[in-house]
Image (cartoon, rainbow, N blue to C red; front, side, top):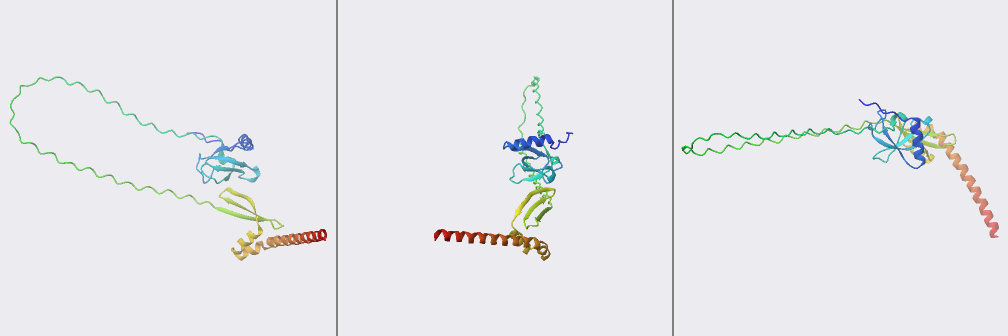
Length: 228
């Protein structure tokens, strides 16, 4: 029984940060603590955040362009041992034929002719064994997905997505107009809950329009003075 691989240590994270600084991706493998990925599957570290963020290590599994966020105990820098195929048993050598002993020959004598024997009936070949139906592959286990919208007092919005225990999308800015469109297709209670934040965004945009209009008026007056 082999020992379980050690999770990523501080030394491993330091080495990974050094590789990323040089523009190289750091290879790792998934441990049994990882969810939704095969144990021993390989991946490359894409970025490393701050430990206070929870799953702060962003990796790209081999064979896919998507990235997932993991914690150190879900990854290891130790390559798992390769499985060796069992050698097929070599056939035993055939024994050498034993030379036949010479036998004394009896004098030939006439044998009455017999009618030729009927040829043996052909034995029907056994029917080919029916192929067993292939077993269906087990369906992938569904993972709970959580989408979170956050707003500031100034009316700025961000969105983040978590699949299971992994944060697949970090907080990403979202335009208030997109949030307003999404709120129209949701229950009225949701729209009422975010209305105050949307109102702050409208106020901020109105102030920006007034500021730009004043700058435009000043620029037009300056242009007229230069033209006159």
